Length: 164
Image 1: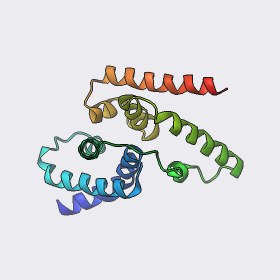
Image 2: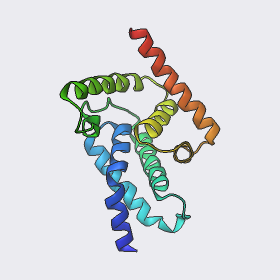
Image 3: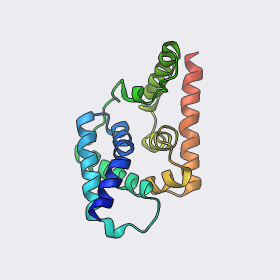
């Protein structure tokens, strides 16, 4: 089982790290929460019911963040270069700058959204979880998750329209 957990850690480390960084906005805190996530996963592996391992790990990570958030009761602005590693290497410098600017604008808009809307947009649009997986992470029913995602996206669209 140790080899299996090592391979799971290797495969999902970056996904869990990016998700936690997008929630806590601090590199060091995200690293600590990733370690806490995999520690909790190791301790609770017997509770794993054979569902999608990525969804289960995101749920464990989300719970670790909630515990951290409740303990510290604060949020910070996301690190400015968070999404720079996600750019396609084949894009021109101009395209990359435009994408970077657009992402920065969306990040600024995200920080003013209600927490549930922000989580919905982050989980589905930025981290690529399906509706079902993201709803499981947030512990809500899938139709309600779709409503949260719609409202989050709509708020971003409205703010973008207000800027123009």
